[in-house]
Length: 175
Image (tube, rainbow, N blue to C red; front, side, top):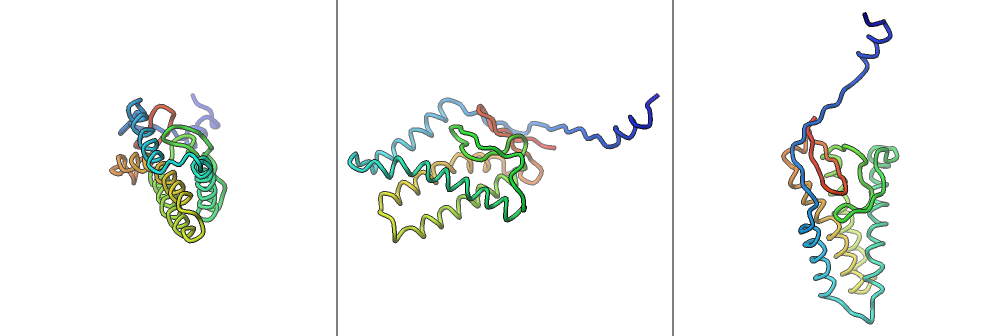
């Protein structure tokens, strides 16, 4: 016979059961294709006498993305990013959800990153040299390309789906 405290506990407890809807593995050929794209793009405008824009643009874009995500959470939700942490990966680098996160939220954050980033790079156009502009735009789009592709693949589940990002795959779960 359960005690009063145990029955109250069972009423307050919630059991989450997620059903896997779709999983996209980060296979070696996708990683090789992704890295080949950046190597081809960098070699297009490669100038060995001026390596600074190429070397500095990627960290600048990472820092910029971090600041934009922090600002998004601060101004829209009004709080810090609980459940999000800084991680490095091939397709996903920067602030990412630790566990399951709403596909709608992740998609909104990615769209904000894309459009605000493009707008700010366009605003810098008159004041920065062309090679800096090229590398900032290149790394910005290159970093967001696989993320947006994953979200496009999960678009059928965006209203009720959850995304989980690991080092080996990106998965979509239904509640």
